[in-house]
Image (cartoon, rainbow, N blue to C red; front, side):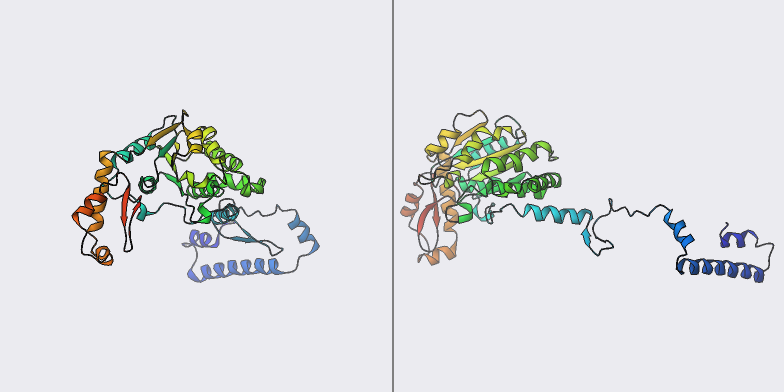
Length: 361
């Protein structure tokens, strides 16, 4: 049937305006009657006719966000937003250590530790078989400041997968138990495919949320990273600082050391791990002499370390408020000279004391 607009248009030259109006009104009456018929109760004949028609299917597979309400009144979240919400709810089952990430206030003083930072950055860019970098040094040698600096730099470059800074002063950061769950969630936040993979694994085996480290590493980190590409042409780095903080004579938890020694090399070559620690007996026994682990000691007695300490002291003495709180407009030059002789250990000054710390090395 030809639409009334076309019928009217095709016969425009043959009919006068009044006749055209009658045709248009007739078409509207036909439409009105059809609508009335559709609104009327179904007869058995019409019901049979309708039942033989194919059911209408609403395709929501390509819909992004929203809700579908079925005849029972149930609401189902669908689409991209719904998928993300469901995945996030599942990932929330994994413990996340708050405050364990890198801190911009804990980085090295600009211009210091140039050599070791350069070495670590070169390793991080490489895709060779040494995918674990072990930075070792005595307490106060600057390991944490270096780790914070590297993490900050990698974050700016979009190459930081996760960072975890152990600290015995905080319960959530004094044990290795939340390490891999935190790392897994950080990685999942960056890569949707990996997030979906981890989510599916958790749904199949909810016990993974509280499983031993070895199972969590295998199922939540190693497996997903091997099954999915990160889309990175370069490396992706995980930073773990103060590894020795999780190990004590009373609680010699060496499972993390075993994983770094015997499992970490199985990661894709672009996924790399930077760890720092004191060279304690347990750490040395597990990490030393492994082909996939590059170890780098911090020389606290080097000329560069001494220069870095001097730069840090000079920087701190420019802080007028700090000097006022210490009750003196400045420090005696002899004392300053003695402070600079403390070797590779950084001098940290506040209003109450002068003490050794690891702010810049």
